[in-house]
Length: 394
Image (cartoon, rainbow, N blue to C red; front, side, top):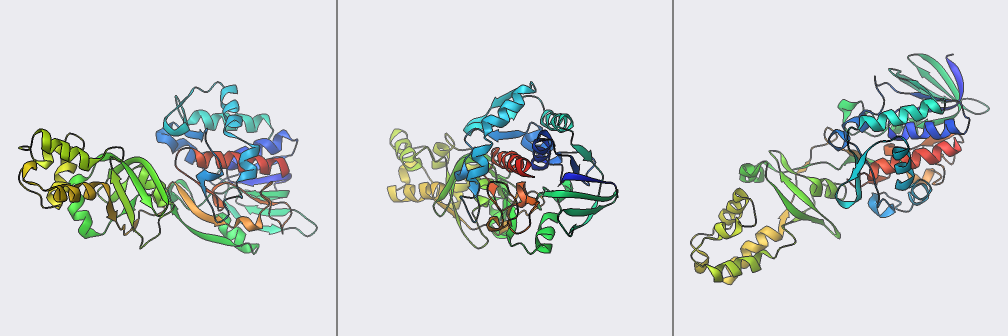
């Protein structure tokens, strides 16, 4: 046997490292095990390498879960301000982008360095390149973990192994297998914050638009997001699409409104009045990228000058741009998904500690739990908060 600890954390990602820090600060002996060669790989690639480490507006409303109230306790007990205080204590320069998103000025590696320094200061041991085989409950209490480095034992085991998103970064879905082993329910998992794909026929029509971005509102039912829309060679992407992907299901439609802050019909009528000899495409190109304007005019079969168009025809063109129904054929899947939706059913966890109600000493935190944040630093805040409260209890 390699050793016995108070706490073993499986997974050296955002949630796992935060949990190890807090448990170590409480005087608990902690070992963090990970099969990767370096800690915090998803942190490293996040935010274009600058890590959108939290969002100052983070609250339960920004999360998708079968139980939307579950995240309230952890988010209230470790807030964005609490994490920001740690960032500032380590002298990491940061800035706020739109919608409350906080980024490092320099590099995401600053956040990883901060977490590993904090773990070291708290006495937590980090075991990298350590493959986990099986987990078993010890008679009389505690857990035994078999690994490529030998056997570990601990009174508390924290599962922080993430979800299935970005398998090339080492994602495996291991936490779900452990949940199944202990008879815990798992909410169906699917890719979240992911680009959406289109059927070949629609994709062919939109092919000339690949690489074009525009401000948009993407709506699904009562949920809508206003951010950038990006046309790609596979379908639709950009922040607005990634956001709505967490609510969309296969077979359903989304509604696209391009330039939602502008009344396109009013713009066309005004242009017609001011200079009826110009084409609709010319008028639209004042607002939209040229290729996008051309696409919508051609798709509506509109030819001739604005003066030739009835108000009804202009209305149809405006609706094509600002009330465009799209039925995606699917998503790009876990390969490019930023997160995993679904996961360990929160009904089996204590929201104050993340401990399994029926298995004392067993905890699930971070992405593997059925709590998924919006794009923009929310998932990191859930990692910090769930890791912190588990570290307080483990």
